[in-house]
Length: 397
Image (cartoon, rainbow, N blue to C red):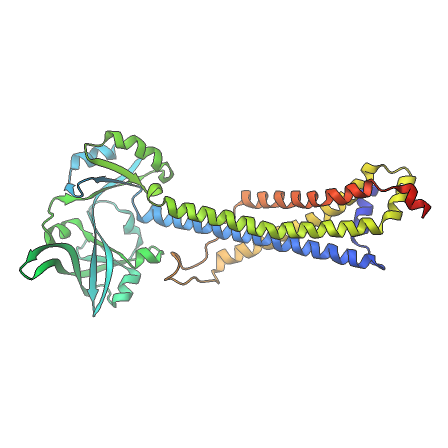
């Protein structure tokens, strides 16, 4: 250990006279850095977890790319589906007839999104069915919707669609009953409480829209290439057809999440900055108390660079201790939160019911480097002032 590091450690551990306060101030600086770094790691882990969880649910439940027609509904064209299915990067293609409607049972009613799909084709929603099946006909309800209506498998519900006809007494919406044959649960309250799935043939038989669909759903092998795939697909589609994707449809939502993440990062970085200012004040007091020591060291041959390094190392040691403990505390609490889910979220307010956590090594490394940089920067001015002391004047006094 060289004399710079030795003196830096000695000044941190000072425990006599006025220097006790400087030592206490150093301890408060360490605690401030621990809290700031741990809070940054936990909050960024939670924000990343929310991003990843929501992306995963949206990607799993919704088609990655939607092909629609400007006129609304269009004939079910197997040739078009076959052509799209052979494009590079396509994993699955299936037809959909999607409409809004109402569903009622036991005196309760709720607005729903009704999805008519082919049961013989593979479909992403099938893996979320927790009871029953869609292949036997009937209707599959979201788990939360079934609880709201007070129904389970085998019960009957009434479905009301906006398709209908005008009568002498006004417009009469289409209404029919279906047996509940399955329940699905994807973990997102909005979907579990408002999505309904019917076999496409059943929906055709209940309406005057036989042979018509309004969406061609496409799932990609890599959902994050949806934008480039959509740009390539649009020129290949027939007249009046157009494609959109999940990234475009949820752009505002994910932009808001990104801005919220940036805002939280800036706010919590202020905690580390406050701790860094505390280090600055602690070092300034240390410089004032150690003027005689600095003068004696200079008279023994220590250079201004040596003096500067002593106080920079003092700050660096405080920072390293605080950052390492903060990293360990943040990672530990994030791991416990991820494993035990001891904080639950209100289902009616948030999309998901537990706080997700994604512990990202790159974020932890970035927070560590940023915190250390702030700590070192906070020591530059006090170290500079110490190196520029007039040692002749100090020794004369």
